Amino acid sequence: QVQLVESGGGLVQAGGSLRLSCAASGRSFSTYAMGWFRQAPGKEREFVAAISWSGGRTYYAGTVEGRFTISRNNAEITVYLQMNSLKPEDTALYYCAAAKKDFGLGDDGIYDYWGQGTQVTVSS
Image (cartoon, rainbow, N blue to C red; front, side, top):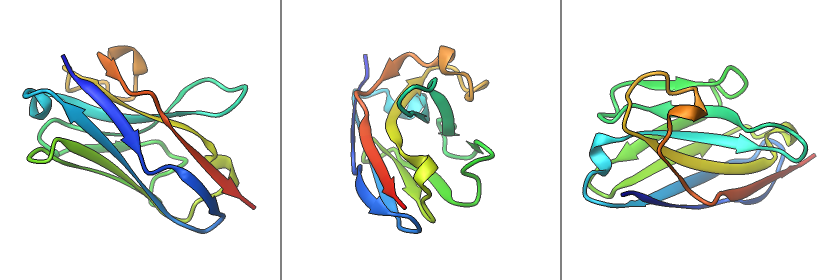
């Protein structure tokens, strides 16, 4: 069982930065791949970024690649999403998720556990 709690969301102007954190409970955190997803009002949830259980592989949606960086600290059982050069279209509720599988990480269907989300709002 893994419980996930996101934090770090807020209101920021376009061009600004935020760092989201996802704190996990459970001793098996280091065996889970982790992902970040987001959902804007009226839109479907979409993949943002993912990282393998070892941290050796990372994946990004094309819309955020080069601006966002996912990382993890297994000792602190936390995964981060550094978001730079934010745009109004990045406004959404951001969720972190944990997956036992270590492939197909862009597919939200493979994730076993989800957090409650943290709101990111980017003003123009």
